[in-house]
Image 1 (tube, rainbow, N blue to C red):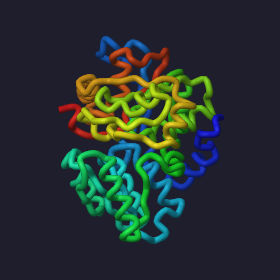
Image 2: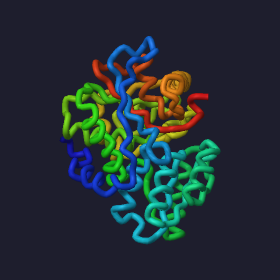
Image 3: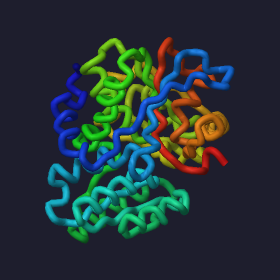
Image 4: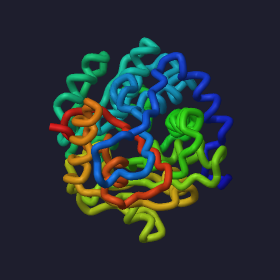
Length: 311
């Protein structure tokens, strides 16, 4: 395994800490499917059924149960889903939580955050600006900061999803994963590469927020000049060296999908399975449905619940 990868032992240890607090989300077969573009025996990992509606509690709990709080409150910045993960972790550990959201975050994210007991602060137009404010609050208010995607313990928690996928669908040959900051794909890729080095891994970003696609093309981390996508949870202007290094080492390809392609995929998930997903939650399926990602036996992670994609 490349030195950049999160060690399998750390992912397994994270699983031991967090499993009692999470749902074991299902892997299902998409077939028989009414979709002309999906001919392969496609599998779907329905992480949108996870507590809070996305994979994010895995990473937040991994960090928090490893002593991130030490009795202090937790603080983070989020497009919405990571904040919910941190709020849930704080709820489980009986700690206060502060979550900074950008102005672009859907209103229902703030409502859900408050329902888990978090204090919500709106700051900045994009996640990067919210994150600056969260770091300042951690320093000035004595809070424990949990990064949305660039913390090894957070990545170890996200990697537990990869362990479940290989246990439930060992026959797959291609894994398709949405990329925002890169926490999910970095953690999952670390887990599956350790156990299945032959597995093809494809990342998916929005056309309007090609953070890692552009960085890969440049050969180094880049900061996007602007973001132009409604998939706010896939839209940081810049990632971090940890994520970039792991993705460069372990991910075979990164493809781009439009907002409309994500919307069509989300509507299909709703019509076919009754699943309400946000745009980002349907990004991996959109890549397969459009032929931008292919495989003989692919699996797409449906990573986030919501209504902005399917309505």
